[in-house]
Length: 340
Image 1 (spheres, rainbow, N blue to C red):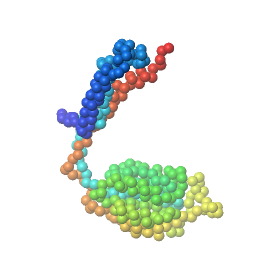
Image 2 (cartoon, helix red, strand yellow):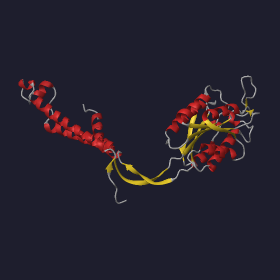
Image 3 (cartoon, rainbow, N blue to C red):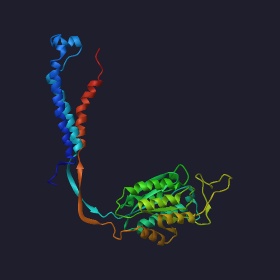
Image 4 (cartoon, rainbow, N blue to C red):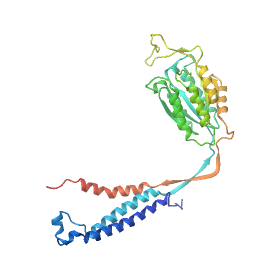
């Protein structure tokens, strides 16, 4: 590109260079005052170092130090001003609507009352959502006792597609199923998105939660943040035994295998509080299509517009490197061992 367009991102920082003027005035004034101070009455200037144990800096030394520190100050101000050159123009996109998936990976999701297991069925549902989606940006948070952001909300779902086969309950060392923590993390992610598009949450779980005030938390998100809450139930009402982490079945306190059942009542209560819809996962595509349609507010997909934004290559680090190079000899000199 012939026109590199060299400029500074924040040129107002150069006003800070004016701070050198009062410093120079103070330095000149203090030198004049020192040369006519009271101590000059008691001895000649060449004898003062022997009386005080120190000597006054010569004018060349004083102003030489001032110039060196002024150079460092100027380089730091230049770094703060943000020198930049060469750029590329990037075409903008309409914001589009967003769907953030909350996937339960607790141990109960390993139950096989749906083949081959609840978690495998959940992975297939996410795969179906990605393949059928044409309008939404999708993100994924996996959680058990602790939430983990597997993918932020983005148009590029290829990385999410690649990560699906590795999702298992072994990703979390601490077992449990805590939805509150996942909702907190989801709220932080969705707050950073443009407000032009709809924002929705999709919980994929068996609903095996033992936490208070979940409907109230979901209702608060819907009312204060305009975040709709959908749920996709995985499992059956008859339920199934929960496999243990080292094989066999997970026992309860009495030694009997833990039985986990799909809690549709809670999941429907959550979706009613969040203004969303509930579906039970099956092997058809109707559940995925219903979730996608319910998450779309803007019927136009994210698309390129004629407007462009300019992305600059920032070079603020170059003055910082120069400052470090100029200061390095001073550190070596101060740290050098003294000769006896």
